[in-house]
Image (cartoon, rainbow, N blue to C red; front, side, top):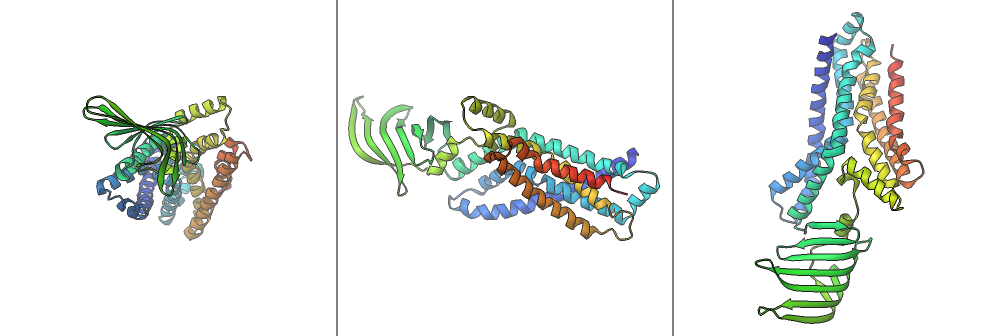
Length: 362
C-alpha cells in the first residue's frame, strides 16, 4: 500500500506543479502586459517591474492554488483511468478511499501551505510590491508614519511633510507643515498652512505662513492667503495610506486590529469577514481536490472514462464556488449574515457536496 500511496502521490504532485506553473505563467504574462503601459509612463526600469511581479507571486499562487488542485486531480485520475491502473488497484482489493488518500494528503499539504502564505508571507510581499510600485516606480514619497490623525511623508531628498489630518476622500487637509532641510541636515525653511485642498490637479494651501532661515541665522516670515504646494500625490494616495488594508496585515496583526476597533466602538464587520475569508480560502485546495477526485472517479472502470464530462462538471462546480464565495463575503461585510458565516459558507457547502459525491462512488 505504501508503494501505491507514494506512486499516486508523486503523480498528483507533479501534475499539480505543472498546472500551477501553467496557470501562474499565463496570469503573470497577461498581468505584465496589462500593467506595462502604465509603468512605462514613469520610465520604470525593467528590473523594478520584474521585482514588482516577483513580490506579487505569493498572492497570485494563493488565489490559483484551488484551480491547480482541481486541474491536477482531473488529469491524474484521468491518466490512471486511461492506463487501467485504477481498475488494477480495485482488483487488488483497494477501496476508493484507499486510492484517494494520496490525493487528500497532498490537498491537505497545499492547504496548509496556503494558510502559511496568507497568514504571514502574502501581507509582507504585498507591502514590498506596494513599495516598489509607489516609491521606486511612480517616484511617490514614502510614508514615514501613517495614522488616522497624523501623517509624515518624505518628499524628495530635502523635504519632510507633516499633515495633522486628511479627509476621508483624501482631497482635504488640515494642519499642513512642510520642512525643508539643507546639508548637513539643517532646517532652512518651514511652510505652515491652515488648510489644503485638491483642486484642478493641484494642491491649494490656504492661510499660509512661510519661514525662511537666512545664512546669518535670521528668520524671514511671509504670509499669503493662498499658495500652490508642489506635491506629487493624488487624493487616492492619501486614502491608501490612511485606510488599513487587510491584505497588508498578517492574520495576527489583523486580529489585533479587529479587537482594537471593536474596543473603540467602530464597525469591524468588513475586517472580520476578510479575516475568515482568508482562513477559509486556504482550505479550498483540499475541497477542490475532493471534488475533482470524486467527479473523476465516477467514470473509473468504464471503457470510456468520460473525461470531458468530468472536466465540465468539475469546472462548473469551480465557477459556482467562486460565485457563492464572493456573494458570501459581500453579505458578511454588509452585515446581512454573520461575517464568519458569509466567509465559510461556500467552503463548507462545497466540502459537503464533495463528501456526498465521494460516498456515492461504487
